[in-house]
Amino acid sequence: DAGVTQSPTHLIKTRGQQVTLRCSPKSGHDTVSWYQQALGQGPQFIFQYYEEEERQRGNFPDRFSGHQFPNYSSELNVNALLLGDSALYLCASREGGETQYFGPGTRLLVL
Amino acid sequence: SQQGEEDPQALSIQEGENATMNCSYKTSINNLQWYRQNSGRGLVHLILIRSNEREKHSGRLRVTLDTSKKSSSLLITASRAADTASYFCATDAQGGSEKLVFGKGTKLTVNP
Image (tube, rainbow over the protein chains, first blue to last red):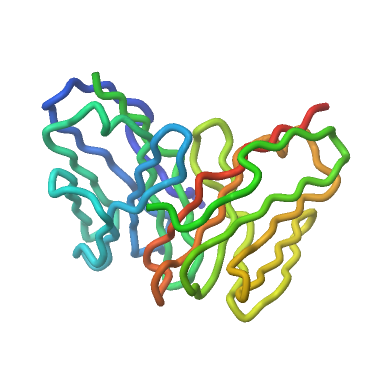
């Protein structure tokens, strides 16, 4: 059983560009959350998707948007990239239970 | 903002010794979870303890929770070099575990 998968593993962009990160949840999981982890910090909640709708959102600007597809996979989009968006982006999934299972992350570098 | 604060920020021990990490949080919770992260990779779930539990064990891990003090501790017994990682506590800030709020983590180094 594959766990949570994310793509790409690494990404380099320049300021002002747009980026799309992808996540496939663990089999049977219907809820996907996205987190941003800056260097030396703990992960910070961006938003959560369930039944293709954003259910809860953290303190992130509208430049951060997402989508969930009928197969429960999800995308995170970030527009107008800033240097401060450089971070590890983590996707987590769960199915009803309390435990969230994390993927390996996408490391984004904005130059 | 970070909900939890792990203590210490960094811990270095010898293989075979026990490692204890502490976590404090600010608001009422439903449960508290501990995660491990190796070298900036994904988070691995270690253990979940509910607010009505005081202690939980899983293999070499022992977690305690004191809701009156809003604190938790993670004990790793008989540590191994492979335990070298960052450890985070995470709490559900609201009633439904929808959003995990993490501390800054404890960086554990186990020397062979």
